[in-house]
Amino acid sequence: MKHVSILSSLATSLSFSRAAPAISNPGASAAPISSQCINIEYRQNWIVAECLTGEDATTRIKSAVYLHNKIENSDGSLKWNAGGGYARTCADCQITGADAALSCSCGTSWNTGKPPNIIGTIKLDEHISVYNGHLLSNFPSTPAIPPISSKYAVPDDLSYSFGGLATCPEAGNESYDFCKMTTNSCHTSTNTSDTLDSRFFFTGPLTCYVPTIYFPAHFQFEALKLVSQGAWEVLGYRDETCSGEAIERVGPEDVGVCKKFGDQRVRALTIRPAFNGDPQ
Image 1 (cartoon, rainbow, N blue to C red):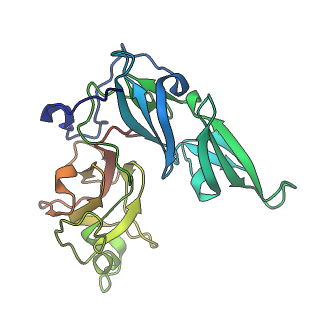
Image 2 (image 1 turned 120 degrees about the vertical axis):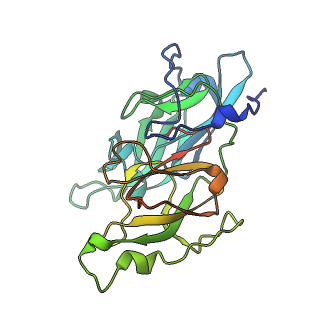
Image 3 (image 1 turned 90 degrees about the horizontal axis):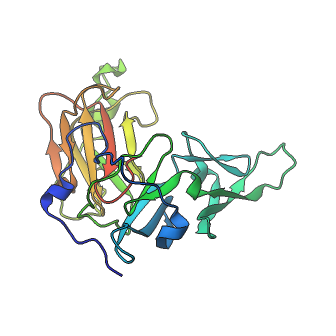
């Protein structure tokens, strides 16, 4: 079996904008997971597989789609929902069958007369397909198909975390800045598992995320440190609606680096995979 080789640095130069790091390709058609992919696995709420590019009968790309933000547990039944959240009340998940079905043991409501846990199943082929070898979801919106493959491999560990230096001057308490007390260290480290400075932990992409912890105070970052085994890209915005262009970027080359920003604080973040992963 052939795999797509590492291309030039152009292949992975990611646009410094809110848009997904891909260019739509209207000529690419959607093909089912079941007929195009091998080595399909369920990992940290992602589907990961090696899928045919269409170039020939053997060339494949290993890519991934995050499921937790697309599927919900509706009283023991798995359903497509833009809010997602199934992994909070479902366990023992696996992907099986010719139709690439996600199957989990999911909790039910106490007053429905159902057993406390039942098996919920959903066919991933309904909203996840293969486009030129890339696994991509058309839920909740039309996918942007990468024109070329990323040079970064899908990591074994898909999680990431971040922390840094932040304040929340708009919280209304001048004598106690909760954000500054919480994010008060930012040290550069070559250890990709060093989460000493991390305060936020995730396993999937985020779109216009406003950092908060416990209290309604919104963090405003003046420096940020990304920690991950895999390649992720962080785009920082000056306002909480992520309007306009990103004002700061933390890329795969910055993992472990305490990256100090300019005069403008970052109030919201979009975080997306730089490896072959669906940014939705």
